[in-house]
Length: 259
Image 1: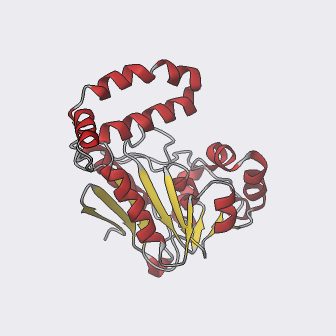
Image 2: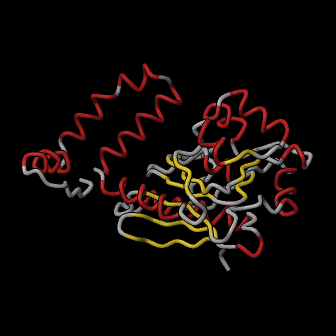
Image 3: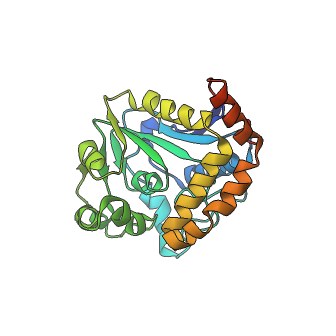
């Protein structure tokens, strides 16, 4: 039985973690299923954005360490299933579509590391984030050491990475890890509204934005700047670009087809 549910609403692929009786603890099978969901999102042209959320009071209390420990000890890392995309973006290609994430309650360890690979995040006021690995005799291996200092600031990140102490939704918002904090129970509809807004935008333009932003992050601004107008030329030749001009002239909302 899979504890990862997927459903399609409009152009949005919803990916739900559904194991509340175990506080949504991540098993190796759940990791595989999450990777396969990202692979599906990446491949299907009609899907424009992914929305990741979880059932229950808590997003997740962490991983099933007893099941993961032998894999970590063997140096195997996170084997990606065929057709999947690594949810931690450590190996293989990244998902090309935008990802929105809604979190609540406990958002521990792997939740933070997956969140760091997403593009927009919403948290309930009761969310508690934590990287607990140093309290378990290990250290984070899903990307937190690479990305948390970058996205949260060096000293902010090291405070929590090196102590295992939790931090609040308010602190996550202050440091830029989440973009919106809402009342408990409102995180999903708030995130869905953001996902719908992205899905309504021009898909080729959205893809070009992600590509350029990631290139600047990985290889520097100069490399990304050198390719801006090559990609702009291709986008400007699209049917969506023509629709954008028509909708402007006709004073209506554009309807984009992704071509």
